[in-house]
Length: 178
Image (cartoon, rainbow, N blue to C red; front, side, top):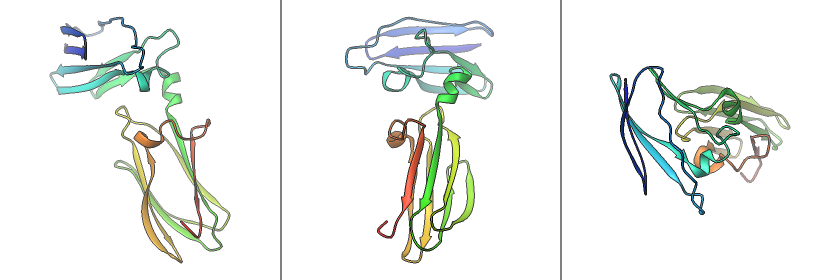
């Protein structure tokens, strides 16, 4: 069983106990300012958590075509959307060396170490990934060039989720001036 308690600023939907293979649903209208937010507390025998279950700025474009957001509670956590929506969350980063000499990079996230790569002049290095459930995905890279070194946030979901080009690729150029 899963015990849930869902709320918005204006509505408390109460506490509900959901048995295995059962579901709970509700309907609402997104406010004029597109700031509607519902969050739910979940309690299972494995633990507890509170999640933003509907956030207009995030879910207005990510929910199913019939305006239904689907979430599954599983042993390893909360899962949302269909495979089609998960595809929409795929992002890419491409770093291109625009300098006359090699650039050495080392990129990481909390969960992934992409290793050390040397990018020759005019060449690129890139990778793909999915945004995590909480929209907190962060990749950072250390850069070493003849002129010096530095560490930069290369993908930060709170900044880049909707900023990258229509193909969901964030392009970065390494130049002599930065």
